[in-house]
Length: 108
Image 1 (cartoon, one colour):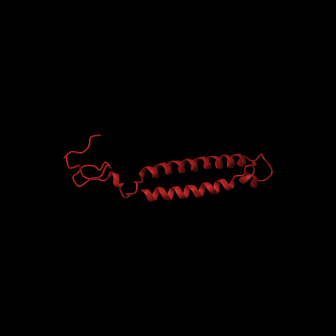
Image 2 (cartoon, helix red, strand yellow; image 1 turned 135 degrees about the vertical axis):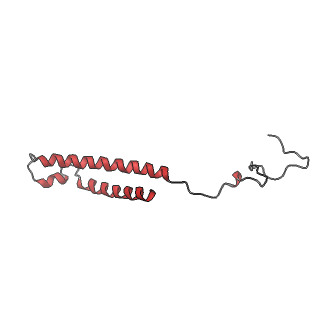
Image 3 (cartoon, rainbow, N blue to C red; image 1 turned 45 degrees about the vertical axis):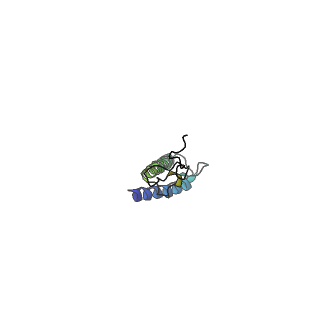
């Protein structure tokens, strides 16, 4: 499942880059290729489609990123020596050593 979401994330990212490059911030972009006449019905529909595609791809990237992050397991690393258990089953408190010769450990 993780490789599938990773592929979806990469594909959506590449498509978003393409869609952003198609847009023109000055109002031209792909719609300017239809000619100078602004009466064409396809011009407004093209701008709407590009805008919806941008928001949809951004949402897909957001959801896929969150989903992929929540599904991944943290990598196992070497445990902190202060948190290792001692051979007797008691956690290491970091005070080290054995109790004094009197038989009891110092109280905290």
